[in-house]
Length: 301
Ligand code: GLU
Image (cartoon, rainbow, N blue to C red):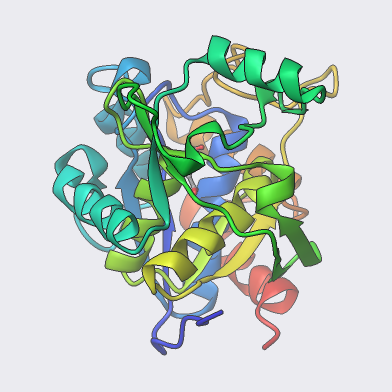
């Protein structure tokens, strides 16, 4: 693995504009901001608007406004993934030329049938594990999507909070889609291309994304890109213990007034194990105090 050695710390928060920030995404934004500040680094925001059917018009600026009212202001103009399609196409081409990606003609039905024949329908998060039908070619069928050719070896990495991790992507995930049948580039490819282009040295994001990391490292290695350091933060859970997400209707964080924004920040900070408010607090003071606390929690070399 080629570890990121650029020297300078560059971090990022990468929201998808599919809904307003909720307590969980605000915690991820706060954690990545704090980590960048604690390292004296640069903090970038990337709007991940490639999955266009799920994006909501105007939500990008809405999210940026919510963040600004919480004092989380990026150090450069945000990057929009919708403007980066040429770079994703180049990366896909590179993978095709180096025989690390292949065209796939299978529909979901085809995959189900193939798995029945094989007698082991393996699933992962309700997704069928691709049995590799098109690895040897399309047999005259039309290409629908593009898949990454995974290698049957474990990917090892060390999370700054969760410790040593490993995953054999070929066995546990299978050859995953990098360009979808609807023509859109998949998150795994766009995230890897942009993290490298933006010189991201440290990725700090919610623990729900931990499971994507091995796939992203495999893609970085296939494309000859450096691997950033990773820190996955604790999730903010709903009252019923379920993960908060836009899909299950998690409430938008209230940033309508300064007091409301501060209250939302405190909830996010509590989820990250940071100190409670003190009297006379404001956003700037609280962020400065947490940066100090974060440094002692997470910046050991
Ligand atoms: N855009 C992704 C999301 O909203 C986050 C991607 C990442 O941090 O790697 O969940």
